[in-house]
Length: 245
Image (cartoon, rainbow, N blue to C red; front, side):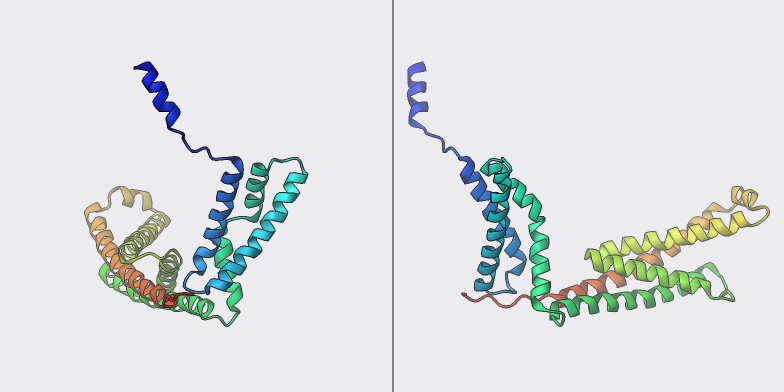
């Protein structure tokens, strides 16, 4: 039995990956990640030209690190680390190579401004609805509208920049709404002479009812903002149809 096991183990030769092969695989993987954001936006020849340019930079960096005494494998890793995140390089190239008037950059900027404007309007409407629910009259300086506008802008910017969808927008709106109203209530209560006493004797059932209603308004508003931002994001990037390069 022992002899047969030794014979079988001798017949099976496991592939051994040499350091140079590992280094070449690392470089190829890095170049693939650099050009991945360009697929659908840049043709094959331009992507290959970028790969050649990045490879030339890498080889120069590798040679420099080898001159400092590092092995080929160590030098490759050092050069890759020096170049930085390959995904970021690809996205930056996509923006810069298209120029300032690029439709990618214009739609991205316009989408942010449009989403922020919609968020501001939704925030103003939501704060007005919240005031009606709480039975509050408008203040002399209309400071509540400033709060609503800031909340709307904040939620919309978060949804747009983080690509949040309707459920996440609803959660964000509910949290922002209830947190702001709760902060406002606590601030007003603690500002009064008997604020602490009033806080201890407050009708917490009524407070919970108000917060629940405000949370529903915030969730509904956040869902509207999240849905609109999702719609805007879909319009920003529509890749070119695939063709054989």
